[in-house]
Image (cartoon, rainbow, N blue to C red; front, side, top):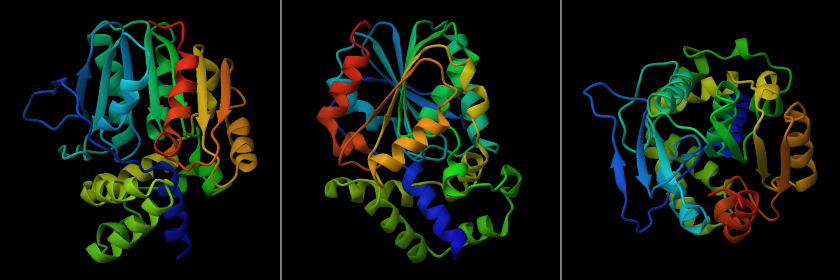
Length: 294
């Protein structure tokens, strides 16, 4: 039971959702018979902004943000394999997605890139910026810690998490009603916005179960604190006030200690989906950070 509670708490911090908004936009699907790590929806023209959603979240979650940011750039909205109706890929999941995004940037000769990432998308932003310091100009990290495991399960080594664990088997074999109860609990604790809770729950339930379970294993093993010094671009970190501002801010300051060029700003009265809970504040905060970017 303790293991289940820990994973549920982790899900509260890392799982994401989506909404649909009225946009005319082009969709760039990676077209082969083989399942690919992601698909991309594009909007606008100009220099690139990569929008990376959190775990289980389609890229369309960023459409309202794109509409409210003062950027004359081309937006790339990523959705990950196993979610948003996309075919799952083989494991490892996180590393495959990261490497595929880096390859995509290289193949498309991108430069002067801005990356906006929520939750796991923020982890990807750090990973990409550390490997491509000359291509990434700024990153915005929204509700993401370099090592979630250290906060959720202090002093538990990464080696304790593996795909074929008894816990993962239990999750894969869980009856739909029991899993729905977990999804209900997670959704209720990720946003203060009642209308969004049903959306969050639906995307959890519609996710490929194996991707959902094994993908979490990848995130539990992840520790990006050792590469933070390689991230040389200017970075905005935006954190939520849940469970309270003092505890949340202390966690951010401790985990991002070695990130050299950062600004940390905490939202008030917000949970993990702070762009749902404090949308106008969020848009203004990001716009202020990107004010000189065109």
